[in-house]
Image (cartoon, rainbow, N blue to C red; front, side, top):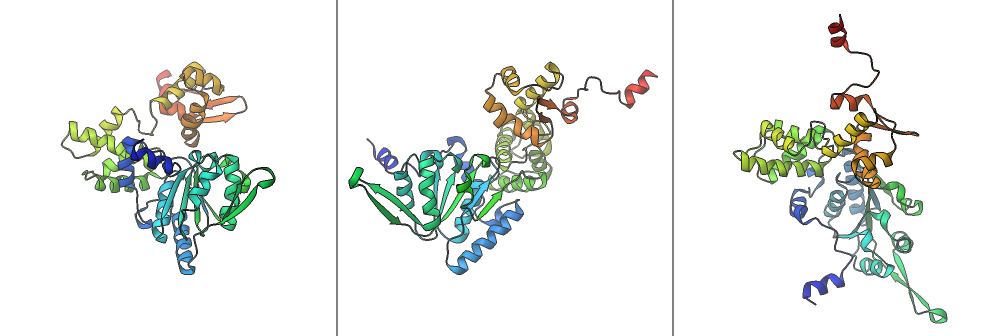
Length: 352
């Protein structure tokens, strides 16, 4: 076994899932301080107060839960939290903590006032979650040694620390775990103006000359998500460097995003297929999710967790007891008319 494999085996919890293609860019584009973080102003100001108060008292920051859709900055805020407090950030992914022995190994390495960040905390195994309760409340963890009448419980004291956790499925988080957080921060989608600032900042870090109009165009199609905005910016840069002069202007940005099949509202090919199937095959609904999943050749979980959330949030579809239905906005976006709808002014003038 190589030295690298030995190292990974010794610390299996600290290795979080990283997409190799995106890892370097994600790290380089992430803000390091509150002043560099754009958007989520209310949450940002609250966290700034908590950090300053904890520093004045010499205590750890109270436990924080970041919840909301993926790509909005939950991990970034946890990193900023540790950086502003001047302590070390320990990262772990909840599915990687398979038993309480791994949890104990992770917790005993934490120094006073450090921040422990657990991503997707709703996926913690129940036994691990129950052992985490005493750690976050009393800063101790109980370890049972031996079996039967010879079993002994050892209580290991822990340094005071801050648990910063993130979840994309708040409803799956147990109530005992949720109530142990001192502050719950709900991150929402970003307005286009904030995303344009994020795109402009990322372009400067990537040394890409970008016009304000191009930044606004990328922001408008980024579905209110900084991660998607940065991804679209990197792909647009590729087209600008290969097919243009290396500078990203509005026309180049529009061409690049059209090539990526992302329309002006941020809908991609799968979103438009979903709406087209609903409008053309099922007359706008109501139609069941199983039927839509079969028509799309996608699993039901993909339809419910990947495709529908943004369409629901933007008002293109609605969920009813009878199934999914398309709204007027969906018809307008695809340039189609609802069956049985009254003619508009131009059609009435043409008739007479």
